Length: 114
Length: 112
Image (cartoon, each protein chain N blue to C red):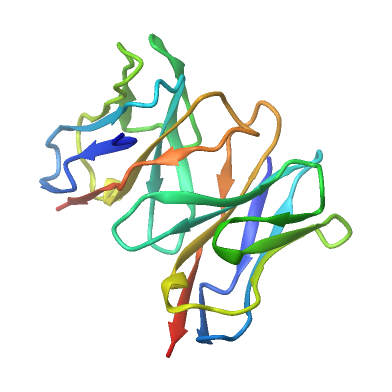
C-alpha cells in the first residue's frame, strides 16, 4: 500500500516555464488537496477536490491549475513559473472532508524557480 | 477565518526531558485541532486530534495535548523525549465546512 505518492521529488524551473506536479493515491479517498509550504510558514491550501471532476480553490490558487479526472490522480499545473512559486508542494488525501477526517500526505515536491 | 500560532520555531531538549510545544488558536466557532509531525524528507503524519470529546487527547508515540478553551491553547507534550522524536511539528485548526489552517511549525531537536 503506497499511500500518497508524488513526482518529481525535486525540480528546477526557469521563469516562464511550465510543469505538472503529479499526485496519486491508492486509498480510494474522495478528497484530495494541494498545499505549499514556504520556509517559516505553515502549509497553505492551493486547491482541493471532493471527487473526480470536482475541484475548488483554496487559500492561494493564483498561478496554479488542477484537474481531477480519476479518483486516484490529482495533478497540479504551473503554467508560467515565477520565483514566488519556489516552495515545497505537498499533496494529501482523505476519505471525507474537514474537519474530522485525517489527511494523509505525500513526501512532497521541492520546486526551485530561477 | 480560523488560524493557529505556534510559539517558538525551534525547541531543543535533552533526551529524557519533557517536550512542550505550544499552539494557540483563533476560531469563531468550536474548533477541531490537530497536531501533525513531519520527519525529514517525508510528508506530514497525524499525531493526534481534538474533536470536542475529551479535552486531553492522547496520540501516537507517547504524545498528548490538552484543549484549553479559556486559554485558546492546544499545547503538545511528551513526558520524556527520545532521539526519534526529532522532527518538525505542525498544529492545525479546522472548522465545519472550512479548510484546515496550519501553523508555521516548530522544529524539535533532541540532544543526547
